[in-house]
Image (tube, rainbow, N blue to C red; front, side, top):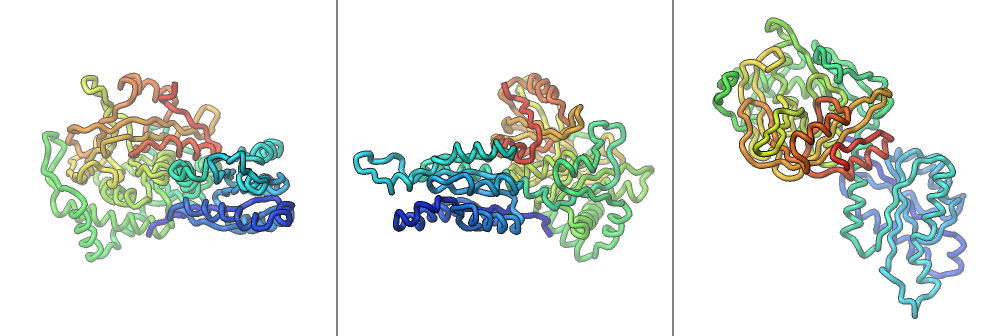
Length: 479
């Protein structure tokens, strides 16, 4: 059921046709560099071999294959000196992120024994300035550049991994459909998003959905589907009794049955509309059917978010995008906002009442019945946990005064310790500055009040994503 799209990454080798009749065996040896590079990519990508280009005619042939392959990125293996006519067609006509790769086989030449053949085999960087100058003169986006010694495999894997994860995030938006169900929470000016501007920036379609479609799927869930979902919920979550918070209550069988039925219906809404992500909110009034269903989606939206289909509450379309980015770069990504800060422990509590990614929970996630959702209508079962201890990333998507989308990023650490037993996620986040200063710096960047909270430090991937998508990135903790 997952509507995930693998990144399609093209690899092309380049050389100089003049050399082949001059040096027997050189071409075959240089082509091995292309094969070796392909081995660094993971199963999150589909790698496409575009062949080898060494003059303008072969370059045009490879370009046509690249254009027909629906690529998300291109890696150019610079095997020796190459005239820039070979890269010109790609710089001019192929509008995807491009990476110039120079992996020199030897860490140094033995100068007393070096031959011209040996130098040509290690001339991987010779054309780097020429190529970079061509991109600049054509007004094309600057290529990413990797220059390493081929024997330094760990460093090469790290650098390619960063770019591959960023490309996966870029690819996730291509041909994507973001569902938009209901309306934004009334009065939250930062939530309002122009769908056309969103599509123009991220390249994803925004599909307007109706509550009546969701209700139809909820009512259409079979008893067998509901029972199966209840069993799944019981296996994943720790169902708790009421806490000291008077809003909490016992989770009864009928509560689980309704949450499971809503989860099955939500799955069908995503499946039937081919959604990559979903932003939703519906308030409802006086306990009506729409209110009852809308307030019982937290388990279902958390299960979907944990299966790589991000959901964002309060119809926050921008944070749905941030969650998708965080998911694809490897951070998981939960829906969150700033909660109280703790002067004694010098931390900020960050969390929300849903949706969440249970894959990044520090312990078995908890279910609590809430008699009411503060600030919202209805009652239902809610998810409570904190993120795994260790490095964490925060990513917010906002809109500036110029009307352009931007990203706001920070890195901190998830700390151990108790969290409030209120049926919400809450992670104790510590930063390299004091808690109050972090809040000041974060707010100074003009974020939206929601954010995607993920595990790990994903600054390099987010930087690469922002550059690939030409989106402004502000770092709250950058000096």
